[in-house]
Image (cartoon, rainbow, N blue to C red; front, side, top):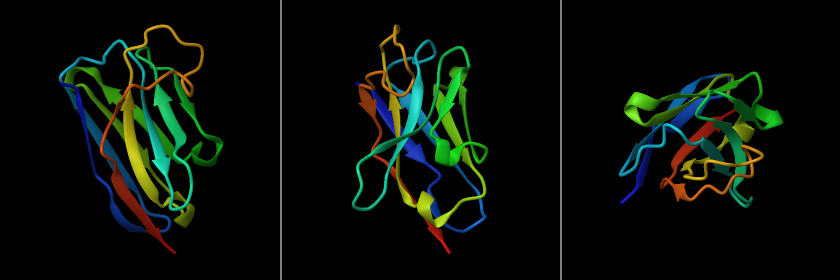
Length: 124
């Protein structure tokens, strides 16, 4: 059974940093994309960042230059380093993985596996 377990969320002041981690078990995702999504209160879940197995990355415009996605395939883990946090980054952050090898866009590949989410609150 595949499990994705996020950690690292919390409360931080605007301008601060957090590092989210997502450890996968039950399947190796080293050859597949992994991603982060977020859902703010009253909003739909949206794409944040993704990384292919080869290291290609994609970010939503609002986090470019502030967030960095990385992965450690040996640990089957993906990370999201979040710097210069803003109150509008407040959301539940979800890790996602897929076993679709062929895709056209990191944002729209069907992500089949999801973590339970970790809360990030950025105070002003």
